[in-house]
Length: 549
Image (cartoon, rainbow, N blue to C red):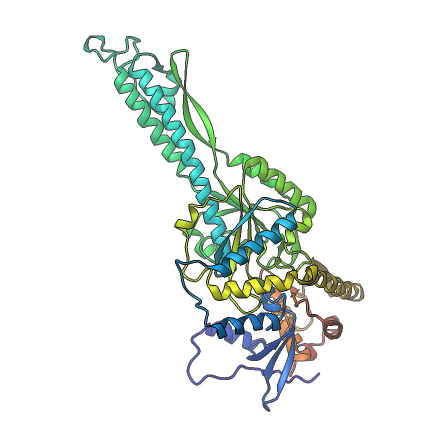
């Protein structure tokens, strides 16, 4: 097939200052195309003779376009908003659009989970930021719980010290040894001794208070422990990048925040092992039989366990139901909050509003973004379970643009479209997901030497290719060894078939397919034909066809 996809974007008169290196790399792969219009699953570019050409978009804004490009109902809501002259930014006032959106989100989540417990919304501006909100709130909650324990211990220590000062108790030798308190000589003649031969009661009481406070301050200052699954991707901000397993994204910024522990994807029971290893204790005191003794008291050190229902950048890997059940049990036993990242998998893409509901995983925090903005607005939300929610967090976490009227209006209309027709959008996601899976399974059966695996749920699917590092064609072999094979495949599909998709970021032999629910049979057949040609080209080692002129 002769390509009419332009090999470069329109050359600017001035040097490029927006991601110039990335743009140069995309252009070298044949992906640096300027799209001028979008509708449904189709993007349009203008070729060299000025004609508009269509490209079938299966990348779907990395999962942000469950309703496609410029859905008419969402566009109508945008136009009505602008025509009305509604202010976008009126902070410090009532926000009816955000309130209505939060109420509908709560209703949908309660229905999906089969619960009456509320979920409160904290809005933000991007998926990574919604993860940061979850981490911050979880830490805010943990610190508050630790403070309550410290205050209780402080009361016990003061009471014990008073007993020592009054001569009603002495500090046990074991406590002295543990705290490093030296025994003062007894001075019964000066009115300060306790007559026990155990030193100066006043001094001992003060030493006890000081030593316990210092030791507990040291212990309670340890950073929280956040956990995630191997293969995870939760963003690239300071906190969220620590939970992103790909070391290339994480390592340069490891010193900026507390590191996470990663649990093997196929061994969720390892969570229990980590919980046991990382137990935290504080020192408390009891007065028994006239002696002040130390006792250890547990305190929360676990920030949260964070996971995706379907790992997006990790290669479209769905969390098995058994693993979800084990995660739920272990986290509940350890009182470790569960954060489920539904940024890419949520909003109906898998055939349910929350992909995690399909495997029975219930979260304390849900993060949503991408499709929440209807393909037009940039918005995100963190949904917090009522039993975890702390209203005081509203005073310490705010944002200029979060909860703005424009994005809230767009998100509200998007959610209404998804819910319309008794959830027709969810049914379409399931139906088209099954159709695409059928195509991919047939492709794998026909080309078992080329296609390694088919994964995913609904309209969040991955097609994994076998390693091509031993390919006869030098360019394919070198790309595979450099970790860019998937992007080379994407360039081929765009150039030869006008189909747009990309590999997943941390599993680059896996192509993602995340179209909208507006998919048609004709679009499925176009994709099927293109993938069959691709597999034939790879099987036959046809470098000329694969790389183009």
